[in-house]
Image (cartoon, rainbow, N blue to C red; front, side):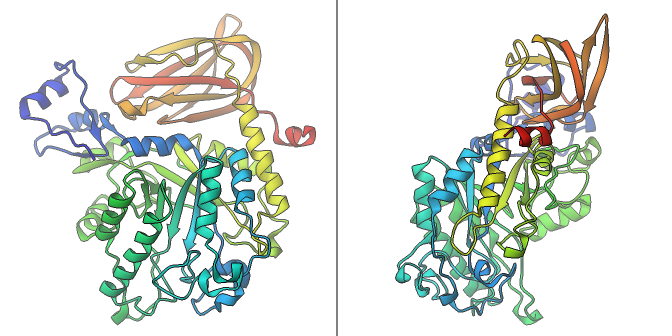
Length: 487
């Protein structure tokens, strides 16, 4: 991670506007002790993502796959005592998963290599509670290998979820011993399967007695990831990508990637989060009021995880309860369209296949998003521009057309700066407000009632420094019922 430290004179020149050269902080910014509140806000505008955070943000939609022992026991959380013989997908086809998700527009597939029950989907040397003890592929199978090979074949990025909580491991609760086991599992996954793009870790813990409380060695876990897969983002309990704070599929109306929040991996971080009154679920993670109270800021963007079905693993009784196209589109607008990345979970069944109903819905969803945002109706929408607070830019439509969605993107390589904006459409000799919003960040989608116009105007109402607008688009999103009927 590159950090830039300012000598006193250079810092003064930058904050006073006397320095023409632009300096940025990657991922982390520690405030000098002697600094005004206004200077803190200005410095916050110069915090930027690392290259791997930026590449992750560009994926926009990723897929979670929950598949394992729970698939065959019809549970959400296994107890760790299941017989490995239960795991036997009769028609396992990783390529079906990957082709479905790739065609629907998903960028990364994240596989549950091990869930809380401790059953490993690869032939690990750390336990017999794995596919090697199952009848599937005569004990020679490797789900992780087959999924990674399919991802490579169809040029899809790949990530792994490895549950720290392990209800099968006898060493769980003996912190040093279990951490060593977990590190070995992590090392196997990050060493033997080629490039890994995301490592997803949660902080779940078991209900063991007080004398056997497991303390995870996050610093050691980070070290393994950074050494073996330096291009992978560390998610949720990692410090590259944060959990949005809910599993409903919605980011905040005001979603900042610049925040003082960090995962609770050590005592100092826990105390600082408590001092500021913040957590992944807090409503305010990046306001001016919060920044002036902070000692450090981080580029820590949000990931929105939600499942296509009510549960995370496959349950036959949920076959008629998959989310509607309308619900998925709403989730897209309120996740990707609110400066977050969508992580949509899908659940292969006991055959080892994505159910036909789920495949059809994913296909509908992918086609709807692709067709809606395929053609920008604006002239010169991709021409970047920079403006101070109160500045605006007008755009002609290619023709007088009906629109109901505006897309805005900041150049986040130069920071996230916009605090509020307004969109107007020319109607006759005057202007009509279509809507307004707060943060933009990587992408903001603003939805409004259908309007026919030949020109729109974007006004940046509030910004922390000069706003760098990278892209503006105007689109027409058809009613999902109408779209489904026509398809």
